[in-house]
Amino acid sequence: MRRSSDPGDSLVGLGTRLSRIHPYPAMVPDELALSLVSRFVPPNASVLDPFCGSGRLLAAATAASLRVGIDTNPLAWLLTQAKFAKADPRRIRAIIAGINLAKDRCPEPVFLVGPTDRKVRWFSKLVIEELSRIVQWLNSLDLSKSESLLVAAALSATVRDVSFAREQGWKLHRLDAKSRRNFKPSPWERLAKRLTYCLGELSKKSSSPRGRTFVKIGDSRTLARSGESPVARYGPFDVVLTSPPYGDSRSTVQYGAASSLCLSVVSHLNGFDHLRASGGSIDSGCLGGATAHRKPWFSLKPYWSGADQSPHAASISKFLSDYDAVCDGLVDHLSPDGKAIFVVARRSTGGYRLKLDEFTVDCFLRRGFILLSREERPLSHKRTPRLINRFGRDATRRGSASALVPTMNSEIVVVMARSSVLEAQATFCMR
Image (cartoon, rainbow, N blue to C red; front, side, top):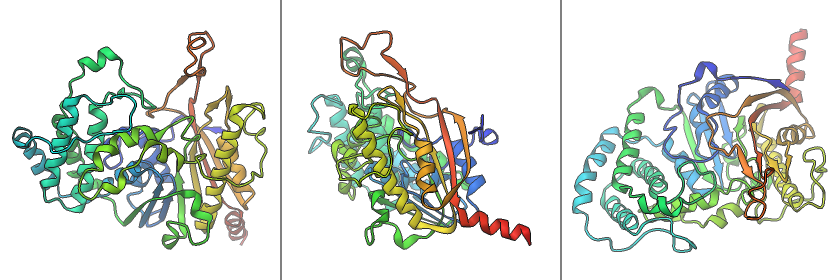
């Protein structure tokens, strides 16, 4: 494996469009996204990201003629749509200016927004009331579709900012009791700050992408099912560029809980009620979720060294089976001379690394592809936990010397292409 210390050295400091609109977890670093696009996405190419998340990889492909993203998480759909919204900076400036007037004049809220199915409180009573006022005020404005998307994305981040969630939390962890008592954020001020950031980004002429962008809330496992692919009409694609989840959502990332917290407020905005979703439903739609999976063609041993009877074995097998189903569909959606670029990592599960890079390579090798390159880089500028407590909620063992184990310290870029591509290149060179 070739190690690349910093493939994006020359791009450090540069950002993708609206890069900091939301603290979405596990985003690819800006410099890596820009580096991959500069190396593997030619101008006017069509690009597919089947796990688009907050849309950072798609946002890096500013010269592409077509960008298509899929994600099962409604919050990911919102953030990616917002990044490509062509909102008028003057209108966003006017909304920001109206916040000071609105917070003093907005009437008593006619309803209280926020999650009602939570076992613990995630907002103070005052914050819930202020968020309700904000929703009422925003719903009273005459906003265009692009403005609505941008405002909704800014509000989703505001909700996270004013909740009791820890600022640097990976999963949805609450502040301790003392911190919750002392935490008195202003939702109006946080929203103004988020929108001011958006205004600054929109004012950068160079950040405007060319071409068309389509984002779908959907299950990438359906890509290989005839008639069910959410993006079949846009393909075939020149490039698949993606950073898939490193494990199933229930045992690792848990996008659902944090996302549903934000969506519980945003879904009260006019036109966004379809985004309302529980954390469990979001996680069930992720790889390794509740849906049935195919019989695996693989043995776990080459990719994970844990025991076959381990409680982790079944969940890993289900995750990899779902991942394999996505690879099936990507092969069908990739043009004959297209490339597939994956940013993956080796997470620790049950005390053993899951070699997702090797599994990715094998998935494509058995489908007639070849490995063009595999590069490893240190994990940096990414919202991920470096250490986890392997005993979880077991209070009797959490404090032991062996409780903390490393999760991931690097990410691996895998580039695959059909073997026919190299054969054609070789034939051309021999002439």
